[in-house]
Image (cartoon, rainbow, N blue to C red; front, side, top):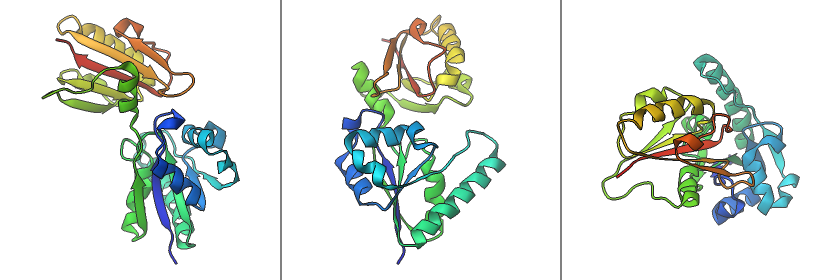
Length: 232
């Protein structure tokens, strides 16, 4: 009997934002997949452990996803990970792949989901609260009103090409590009009125918030989200 793979979003960092459905799935699954090693370094695992300490007794498999843009290396790593997870599914295991935020937003989970689906295996996604929604709530701001467009941008790529976008720009995981982003926004603010915010480690005990371009910290961590809105 074939098992099933779940992609489980555990929210951005605050354990209370993890859904009841995600918690139930984690409890019912035989194996948990963590996209980093050791497990203590996995943000998703830490969130789950806060509300479900018994997670330590689960069978846990830590799989390393390389942080590289080399397509050949990525393809090789993803295929190896897929084969390991596929073996568990074929053994009839219920497997939960834990991911911070939501599995459908820039998540490593989908590299495995697509392969598993193509192999004819059963896959399901359990949504989680996206970090940019939690960040907006923490800041007390709206991401979009009326006809405003919302642009979700992976900040590790060519952010200079996003400066002309209108509405609300959300720069995901922007820690490594904050110095460049800060300079770009400084230049843009000379001709456009901007509202700029940032949240680092949203929902976690070490969460930090910034208001305005000059408060952007070029040394902030990888899990830093920047929100830029056109001012009135």
